[in-house]
Length: 212
Image 1 (cartoon, rainbow, N blue to C red):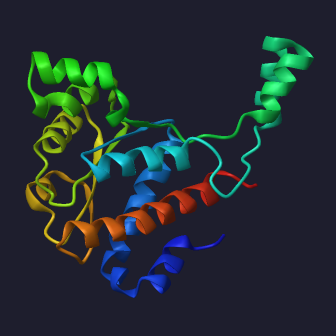
Image 2: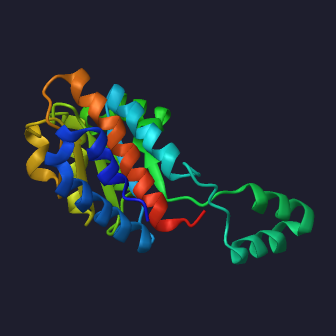
Image 3: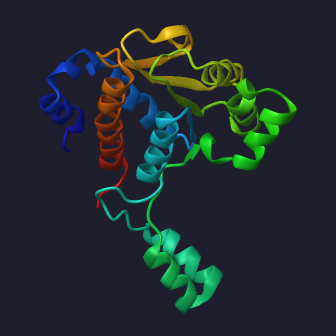
């Protein structure tokens, strides 16, 4: 199996300081997906876009086609008939369940207007999160209050928390089960490291769960 984390550090040697936390993150997520858990993601601004990007890599084929197992194809044929069910089965790809909490515009603006802006993600974690799930919070400063609130709710619901952040980890650091702290302080430099990191994580998970 290709070691995408090793390849990442070969390309970005300064990320060697993140090696153990990267592997811990893959281990945590591998256990989660094997136990039928799901990953919730949240962040602000560019980090919100990163959440959407990650979901796109996990919920469909990234570098692999991820064809459905024959048993799933057979169920689709049984549900929709040989033509329709067979066509759907041929087009569906294997998925690792992940939800970007950044996408709930109606709910998010309702919470912002009716409750408080800092509760946008916490409310969704409360409604969607279950024991055995995980929350990935992305914050370049480590101080995003809405991500912090969501992390507290996640732990209260028996979830694990992962933090992708900058050098210090900020106020979120004590609330993270695993924290990937890139060796940078400026927002631009931190975000430039975040993208290859989450690509490597998604690739490693794809290698683990899908043969082709």
